Image (cartoon, rainbow over all chains, first blue to last red; front, side, top):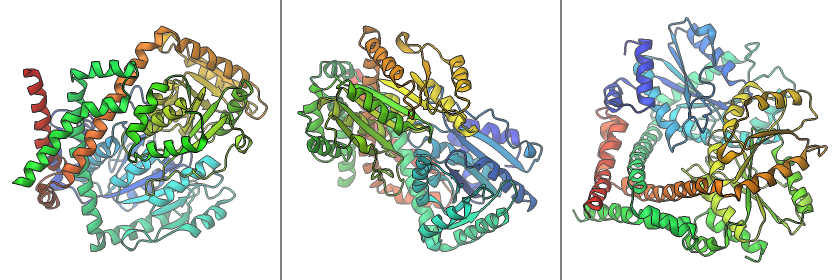
Length: 314
Length: 314
């Protein structure tokens, strides 16, 4: 809580790997959280998110704010490790005690990214950071997850995106609060801003999505981005967003409960003596896989339902 | 089962949306499955997967094989619909009765992509297709999922990939059976092939990963790709891969059982009368979200465990 980097790193590892004692640590830290502003930065591959985050860190540091960055990398499905985990990034900030940078692998399991990232963000929050930036490649699943973690979502785009990236962009339009057209020194930037402007809409709690041209290279537009983030923060501290935050917390608690229950269920089902004979029947095509699954989960489901009935009777 | 397109489309929609009766449909079709060869095609955005799939379809059709394509598109996290759903693609094949093409959205829920896609593949298998191609953008979660669906994985790369794409590539190296360097008319193709060749390794059941240069534009290398797929198929029909397939089926059944149980658990937990008071305590920071989740799932978990003990006593 005094910002010791070694302690922070150790705490994040503990929570990330759900090692023994991580629950107690989170419980102990939780009362100290709620002060940091969590900025999610996402976008298609190649739009220059890391460089933009570097520049944002620079500006926040110039305002004497304490900043932490969590970079979530695409996971290797087999080894489960972060591919970019060992990349040497942001060397400029390496010696700055006011900046903490951490790479983290996205996980394959449900809610894995959001739980791991969310709890790591809480550690960085309790450690006294003013700003926590969570950076992730925005394609598919990761988009959904970052919404659960961050207070504000910055979507990074650039001119000259291919067709497939355009499709990814469409998905990002729905989650973004601020759209940054990065590399705005490239031709076509005006056109992209124009296109995005046309589809911006009023989001939750009175915030209207905005788009701005930025060049991480020349620094153009970076000041405006930081100002917009401040505007968002001020709005967020108003009462209007409280209901939304409460709803998100509720969803988090339900998800975590379901997740831990699903793990127990997996253990129980994997060791079910009926499993092998059902699989044999599936092998002979007497039974389909979904049917086998229904037979396996039936008994457990009945018990959960019975639990509910009992509660109602109380 | 006689290949009627309207019936196939209706069946896939039924299964995709888990509408009433989908379980019976899957159970009825399952005995007719197991004949089709499922080819997964994945790779970073912009590598020309769709054009390559078009060309593959053309070659398979020339061999008088019946082909179906499922294109899995990045999902819009809010609306849940497929972003590319309405794209007009493969107009060449639109009038060919031997080709069925379907767009599908990837889902946010655990195992959503693999279950939806897997069951749709089964419908297309039962409908008499010789080849089913499942095409998906390979970034993050989608990579993991396609391994569960396809018999063989074709990873599509191209020269001149940026740094971030290189990282995604690293993840794809582990899951690919055949690597296609597409757009091999571009400069740098030889270099990419050379780099990949250096890290190819022996995969499961004696298959060594291979890399080949292809140009969807000029048609170069397409014949070799189709030949390699045939080689893979022949290997797959040998006994060596049976154990692997059995393991995959087991994992599918367990996952489906856990998934359906998790859904029941979510319902039960969401309507738990304790939920609101726990959330209030979390709001006051007397309790952390994970702690609240543990209190919620505790009773259910105890019952699942009790179930296991009972079984052991039997």
